[in-house]
Length: 121
Image (cartoon, rainbow, N blue to C red; front, side, top):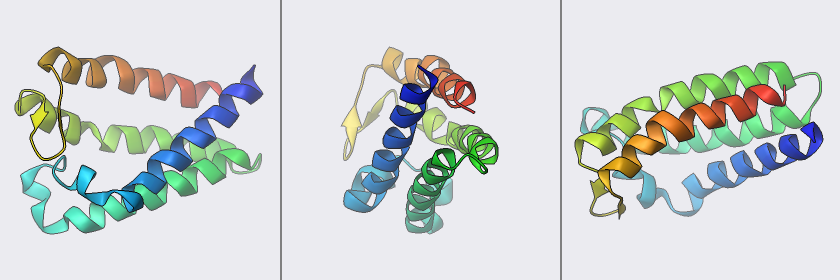
C-alpha cells in the first residue's frame, strides 16, 4: 500500500508542478499582492520545486529529504491559502469557492497532504 501511495504522491506533485508551467495564469492571481513583484518567479520556482521533489521521492536515497522538502513547501504555501480566505474564497480571474471550502483547503487538505507525504518516506 505504501508503494501505491508513494507513486500517487509522485504523480500528484509531478502534475501539480507541471501545471505551473502549463497554466501559469491560474496561479498568478492566487499569489498574495505583497509578492506582486515576484509572481512569475514564485510560480515557476514552485512548479520546478514540486517536480524536483516528486522525483526525489521516487529515488530511495533522496526520499527522506524530498519528503521534508514537500512538508516545507506546503508550509510555504500557507500565505496563499490565507490570501484566498481573505478574498472570501473568490479569486475572480482564477476561481471562486465557498469560504468554507477555502478554510477546508487550509485546515484539512494541507494537513492531509502533509500526512500523505510523511507516510511514504
